[in-house]
Length: 589
Image (cartoon, rainbow, N blue to C red; front, side, top):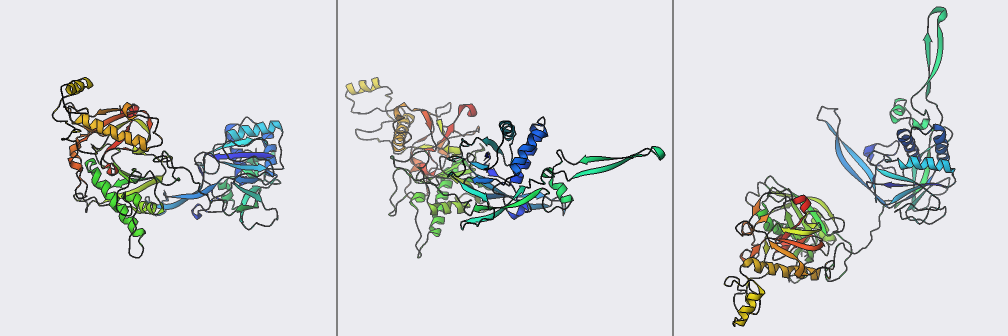
């Protein structure tokens, strides 16, 4: 038996069946044996021209003598649309072209096998060398890795149990019908195969008559000319076929195969959510991240992070309410709103975060990331998909609407752009707002403005002198904010399973980000722009909100191990405040 495994390195296989137009949206699956043989010939002539034809032809004749069978990996179909220059109506004329492809896992292998064929050791070595150089199958974007398999071995990463005839393997089996009845759960597909009797014939060798000399010295000779090397029917190019008006390539034959009807159906697998789960609770694998690009004639400033985040929450809650409306009553999403059915705030910080960010360093918001640790349900995903614009109340927004372009959705394991990347070091890109106000009275007061005690020794001296304080006090608001932030990090470590027991809040290095005058400064990544926390809008549109009255600062945090983003701490963190950005010294400095 001869068996070949093919892995598509880009996760896509692009090929149009013979006789079909590219805009029909048809895709050749599995690859036709005719295409595979031509790919082997092209690879041989391009990469190993020193191998003689006498060594390669017997191998190809063996493969052409039998219609192979296939084992297909799980796959689905997709397509892209683009406009190509046509020039039919002018230099600016364009025509719409569909590029249909089969999407497969990069690690999964497609198995092609000839059960009744065999090669000797020398021929197998020759075929192995050719397959090692085969890098595309189908169109040029169908990158592949091919491997000749031993009858006792499995293709690496393919998931097949074995390749022995009659064995049970994963994937869809596609076999020639050979006059058999088609099972109910299968369909007929035609694949172009080589005709062993005529595929290697030289039917397109032309005889050219040449005449030399005159009169009695005139001589006529016939010379054979070939269009291709080798001059097989199998090597005839498409342009020549069209020129000679061939409907099917000479040397080919059509073979009917039985293919499972559900070969493009992928069964979802329930897995644990990526990254972490709160309090050790496992969650099913689901959409956790939605990523948008912001578009407007005038984009909002980074100082308007909180109003844009609030606008995103309002818009998504409104869309979700309309989608889930029943009998005139709108539905409510606890994940999007952060409140239960009775209007009480949720605990655990597993509901949605709305994170507007400036990622090109121009001082204006250009992306929005919506993240929920517990994941979004089907109705929330529908709302995320329909979000197309925001109304944040900015000046001139009626003339310059803020539009949203959905870039992608996925899990934190598979999709962690921008603020969701892992890092050891993090820097503030929005103000950290304290979770409470300093206590100015009582035995546990935070006397940050009246005392200058900095060290434990000074605190012990104060207690010996009869000072009533029972805790450390700070010389300024920076020290108080550092301790407040450390308490938030301790809460974060306790909530996240991937950090609990691996980190200690006392060992986390927290340093304020200040200018030469000691005032807090927020340095935006990739930009020379520096802002003060007071420049950010910090009041929510909620009655009684006091975010603008809370102490605010900016900090640089260093952990002992990589922490998966997003890292949001403090008050109004679900609306973009207290957002820290992954800091990598090799790229930032």
